Amino acid sequence: MPAGATVTTTYLELSQDDGSAHKFYEVTVADCVVTVRYGRIGATGQTQTTAFPTREKAVAAAAKKIAEKSRKGYAPAVPGQRAPRAVTRRQVSSAPSTARAVAPVLWRFRTGSAAFGIHVDEDRCWVGNQAGDVYTLDHEGAVLARFGLPDGVKCLVADDFWIYAGCDDGKVYDLSAKLPFAAYDIAADVDIFWLDIHEGVLNVSDRSGGLTVIDHEDEHQWARRSQGEHAWMIRADDRAVYHGHSGGVTAYRPDGGGQFWHTPTRGGVLFGWQEDDAVYAGTAHRVVQRLSKGTGAVEATFVCDGAVYSCATSPGGRFVFAADAASSVYCFDRDGTRLWKLGTGGGSALSMQYRDERLYLVTTDGSLVCVDASEAAVTAAQQGSVPVARDVKLAAALPARAPATAAGALAAVGQVPAGSVVVECVQDGGRLRVQVTTDGYDPSWNVQFPRAIREPGARYVVDAVHAASGGFYRVRGDIRRLL
Image (cartoon, helix red, strand yellow):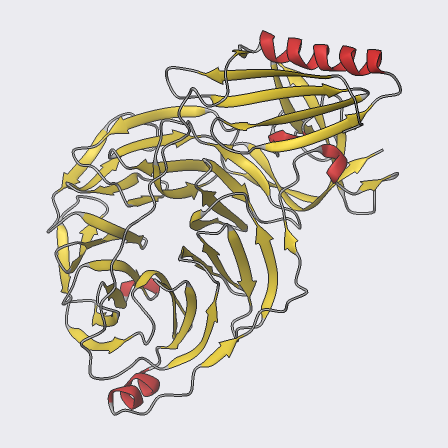
């Protein structure tokens, strides 16, 4: 700030009773410099600074910004008077394992903070932690990339090619491009527990046992209040949304038209998994229960020795895996027969995924752990023979990719590279939407695109867009400004 500069600050808030908005917008003029700070009430927010040739021009620009926000319902307020978003961070305990043998851990990556988020695809392993860090590694443990998100990561979910991170700041970030962007902004009165995305539709379960459904354009669709609280499970497919909470599992119609079935479970649901025809609920009463997607009937019960923190299956549900509060991991046959129990060697697994005879865990000490779950390796482990686990090191020079918060933060191009796609911001009924202008695409379809960089008339170049079944496009690859 220039010495002796005249400083004026205008602080506005938009907080609606239905929880659909809970934001602040602050404009500061210091001599010829305008600084805008904005975000969720109670958070530090994001900042943009612009210099003008004269103070008069700076004041005029600030007045224009304030007027625009006032027309949208923002009003003068006093910072700190409204409470910030409620955030519940899962409180867990982890006891030593009672198993006689330790699992055959191939490698372990310590993220440095408690971790819940995990996703494993054919190329990479993803892990997200409470510090807001998301790392990608190859299947042998080499660290490939790091994303730095503004707040703690609740979970990582995949929807076809796209990977999303749900965070404590109420935003869901698309991690599919070089720079992450906020694809969804969840209402402030929703204390998020877990997320799932199916065909671009976001499903959110929360502390009060509620379910909120938001479409690809970040617009609220419907909400329900379940028969229980603390909803740690949400899974979705074409047929239904499966909501697990302290009272069991409830299946709802995807359009919000009503309930298909409700099944009480043995204990409150702490984690959920799904296959094509069944959902799996891990509960506080030491079991995983397999429920029919069609009827909700309990088809099998898998009994552990402690509260189940996470569960997963091999393809088709041939094997069922579970982890308990006592740092043990289990494998069952599909009929419920326990095949083995082993110690994790490093805390309780808060989330897990199986792929190609490997079981990937994120544990209470913030580690991503790769376990050899092949029959030969487990048999050897039961006899006391396990490999020496390799500790994966993070390269100190690896940069963290932060979300783009303004169009000016993006790389710019003067012409359209071969094979790229051009999208444009357009006004549509009072909303600023994004549509494809390149030939061969339906110009009436909207594009799921970061709100933070939408500007009227702005054009962007993206590597590709893909059509989703809901009648919209998704960005695939980097986003650049078209000059």
